[in-house]
Length: 140
Image 1 (tube, rainbow, N blue to C red):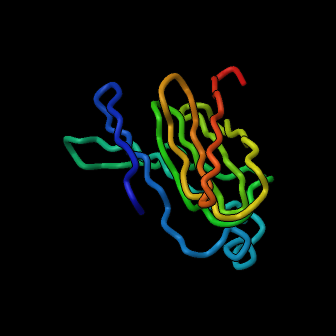
Image 2: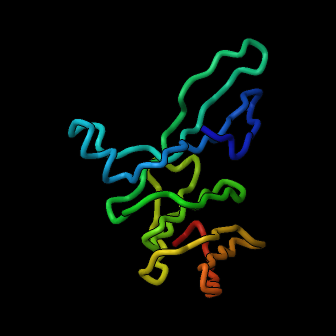
């Protein structure tokens, strides 16, 4: 796992972790039972900084339309973006359980970049030089 960001709220430290896996979600799903077919891409963990005790606050799962490997992720404020090799871009809103939204990118492999910019602007880039700007707001 990799730590993407830490937040503090009411004396509790929240840590957003990205699950590191080289296998695709489809491969993982085939190996697991029906209940756990949706592999989590990220976990939000609440930590008491004084005692070191921690508890899982939330897991961020990909939507049903997601396919392929997670190849890029970025955090901007309370938003997380994940980019799959198959061209899917998904945005999750932390604190809103189950709130994920697919942003369509051109359907091809080779995506390399997903970064948050100012004012909710999402930048995605392809290895061939194509760059796409998406305007994201919580009301969408």
